[in-house]
Amino acid sequence: GSFENQNSANKKISEINKIDQINLIANFSVIKKITKDNKNSYIVVSSNNFFHEKALDYCNDISSHNLECKIISDL
Image 1 (tube, rainbow, N blue to C red):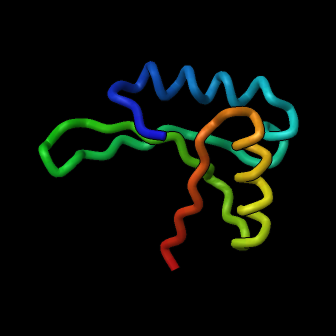
Image 2: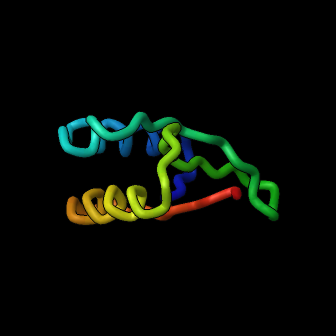
């Protein structure tokens, strides 16, 4: 998801890190983006690269814990 401030994004990472099966598959960090209307937006992303099929499996695991997950590819 995206967050309005860094603290909210960091809290989400803390929630993710409490779930062992998710914490063991990837490292997460916060990226600051600027929206079209010049507002700051913070997103939590995995710093790991996965093949699409494996990313989909991990997204399903993450979603099973009521957390939002999107697969974004820059290929």
